[in-house]
Length: 214
Ligand code: SAH
Image 1 (cartoon, rainbow, N blue to C red):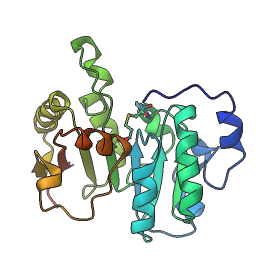
Image 2: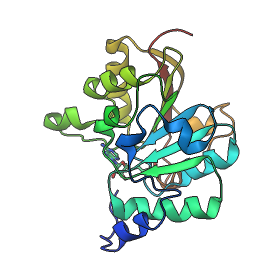
Image 3: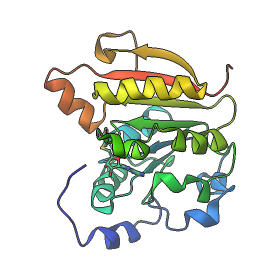
């Protein structure tokens, strides 16, 4: 996501440790202490400006959410939304989703959301796609057998790639939709990109996947 560089972003994130967690490596295996309960933890990798993760946290009080975004100038916008949402079950992390195993223990998170991930259309950048097998190995390490990956995109190429990468990896696919907004799916919380692209008339692709049948 392109936003103007904000030199003050880091200081603002640091000023809100109640939402923007500063010491994620120290919390590995102990995230329940951050939330003060043992509710399931769902994360979003690449949460952008944060509309989805704040909306989900408001909608589902008994789930704990962590939004992960590598660009601080973007995450600071998600921080504003999190502050406005005024919920206890939401935290934000300014880290790279490729290093998730530094921050979470196996089985510590139950669901991973990937929304409108960067498509990296060039073949030589395939490994950077968040649905590449390199990342699937990480997700598999972190999720329990009943854990799920929920993926949405407007990008047909990335969706096709993901269908293929997931099935080759042996993931079980369910609720595959080629036009989410015309489907039966309820309680959809739109992301910023989703609003933008669906307004332009593009269909939204969606799927859910798990590493093993429940
Ligand atoms: N989910 C949002 C933003 C999509 S744009 C929406 O749908 O509106 C993709 C976002 O993922 C960008 O903000 C980008 O900075 C972030 N991103 C890309 N690779 C990442 C990674 N490895 N770890 C964390 N965030 C990442």
